[in-house]
Amino acid sequence: MNCVGIDILEVERFIDMSENENKMKKIFTQNEIQYFQNFKENLMHIAGCFCAKEAVAKAFKTGFGKLLSPIDVEIMHNKDGSPFINTNNLRLNNLLKGRKIEISISHTKNFATAICVIE
Image 1 (cartoon, helix red, strand yellow):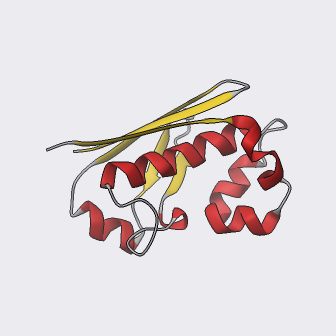
Image 2 (spheres, one colour):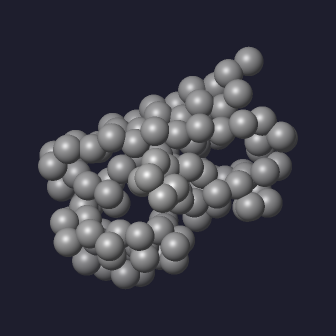
């Protein structure tokens, strides 16, 4: 049985967060933060990655809490820019139980969205 999660947000919600390193570190890994620094206008990338994390939590039907935190869901990117989930996290792997996980992220200047499918 496949599980699906989706999320959409307004990009401007991340203005304050992007300017606060402590808030960023509560949600994003160091690798993700370094990825954001590659872009002059990075708010849409921050929002997109956040949406992907939320979509993963929704696909698991757990939300973020005791079983899974935003830091457990690390969004990485292939050389072609396509996103994927780093599955090296123990808590995430315990939930996946060997299943395959796929994500897709899309954004505009104003909105970001992501979908997750767990097979």
